[in-house]
Image (cartoon, rainbow over all chains, first blue to last red; front, side, top):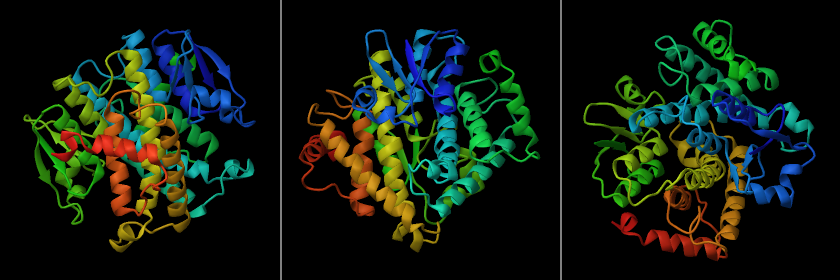
Length: 204
Length: 204
């Protein structure tokens, strides 16, 4: 299986960590994201949204969207389980995971898309008020996670799941590329970050 | 099972249509959304994001997030299948569904959140440039769906799925509440809209 990726992008990293947890081997193919390769007719045939990651199966079938890819990988290698063992646990993990995607990721995304790096690349006309809103909502969500992690070790409960992978990758991206590192005072959040960053799937 | 809902909100409607497809009965409890009921400590105990819909099971367990709720309902009533019969079909449906959520829903959401109704309620300081960006991206996605529906009858393939429910509810909301009705010239999109709107789960 081929994974179309880009080195600094957080979403392909979610897939590579997920695959490493499963001991699944993916052949990573880095695309020329800044050169517009994901917007070519050939790539749009793989993913009409023109985004990475895309998983290409050996028969040429392409799966786009990080979470769709990860769920497919879970079907190939069910253990260690990362999406839930039964319908109720699956639903509760998905709820936590979607809170992170729709409230944290989208806020970091708003700060990134309207920030200086994207503007310098000439890709989007920045809206400063929207960048500030995204940054503010990101900080608010960091605080929420810090509060929630007072009562549990992982974001969706008492064990490591796909929600932790998604949050780790986006938090690292925010710290490195969007100037949105969580405050040092968020000790539960940083303890969680240390805990998940030490996993072999992340260090490897 | 209780579904916390609000009459004009598109996300609870996704769940009620989904449940109707499955012939599952939910007791709908409308919350006082405009009066701030979803931000009370009691409701935040059900969903820390303070949003509807929330599904409350008979033992008091609460599941938030539309798609997590729908996937749980699918586990209770597997047929008619709306998420996919096997891992690959499930992945492809999820990819289409997430394109709709992250590209169409988020764009309509940006136009809504920064629009006059939300501003009049004093909930969010509107950012006009972001409202216009959301409206523009919505129209672009309508065109994409119209193009894709030239080759298939439903959004994620040749049969009705959860992706169709999600798009229908958000498109109806956009037309009614955000002044973002698709242009009449998008005939494939309108033919699809007629097709799905005639289902008993929608008309009932």
